[in-house]
Length: 193
Image 1 (cartoon, rainbow, N blue to C red):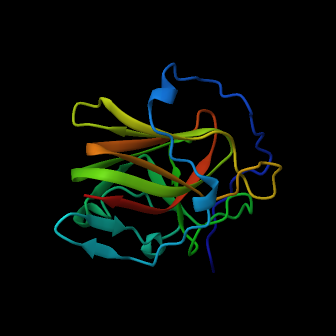
Image 2 (cartoon, one colour):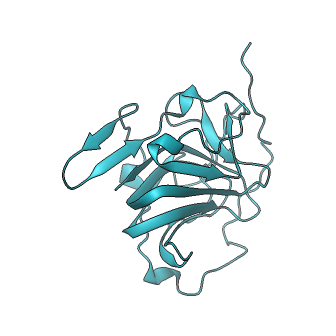
């Protein structure tokens, strides 16, 4: 028997965010529609003298499993995160069947890195505007990427589900995914040193 998480389908998509960042345009915004269908091979690590990239295969997680230190050996620790198999078709996985979602507080997933990274990418599907923020060791903002509006499947959004968001900066110690008063899923998260 397959367990599935239920995400309410009656979510409204807001065109105008409830919160605005004053100087958001000063940060690079990595939302690019042409990358929305990019697919990475499962569980890869690329090693070179310059870059090491880690891709997380989420399908080894159980549905409703609280996700914290399962990937610590790979270099990442999650906060406020749960693994689900979405039952709502508005939130399709990018690959496999398992995605990450904010829980117990919806609209927020945070992750910290065992050692600093230089880039973080993930495919996201959200009920509304979502912000991916990268922080340094002192929790100072380094960079942000914005999904400008919701991108639920079978909606009238001009943005496809599972859109790739990426942030890059030197010495990223943590990231947060935030959709104010919204729900979202994360799939195929990767990061590079």
